Image 1: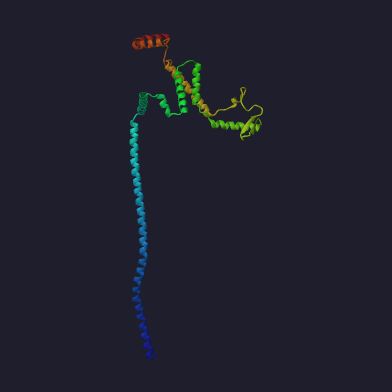
Image 2: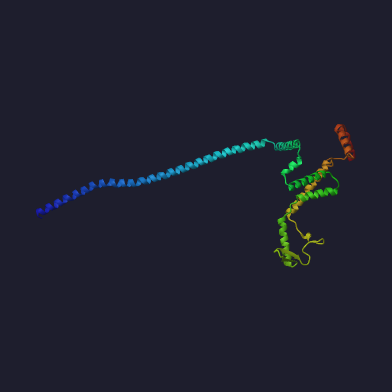
Length: 299
């Protein structure tokens, strides 16, 4: 190989390492720039996450404060209710009712005295606060109450039975829903059998026409014997009978004719009182004699 050719190859070989060294020197300069870009892009991301966390923490703090205020308010309200309940329990309701009644009577008397001092009619002035219908209804109620108060004493058994019957009617609570249901079933059954015809009037209402006169009950009807009452109705009847029996026994005990009284040693109430007075003073002395009589009668 000629010498000139060798020199050219050697100069090219020297140039190649220089270029590689320049590239290696330039590479560290480029690396910090890329790292700075990545850091710059990551900084906004980390800032947004921290703001979200702060918002959540503030929201939780507000909820906790609201729960604390709610619990404090509930505790205060419970204390107030407890104090009011204790005060209500410490006051006798009968005493409050008595005080209210006395206050109403006192105000009534004061108004009556003031009206009489002014020379006015008290009943007429008091009636100004009521309508005519209300006044008539009140007068009817008071007259009925007065009549009932006078009718408390025993007159005869018919009057007593009438009072019991009226009281039972007053306490009666009929089952209207069951009645309407049974009535509709009976009408439907009679219409299907042909004994009852459903017609429409001019007003548009439905009316039942009894063809052969067997649907509606008469004095000679015996269909009621086939009726089977419900268990609740039977229980109500039994409870009413038991209650009437308890009332009868209570009245009998009040009259001094109880079953646990023992031997009857009197002929009337006056004689009964006299025997009770003797027993109160002398029973402790005559107990042995009475026991001897009882043993003798047993033998």
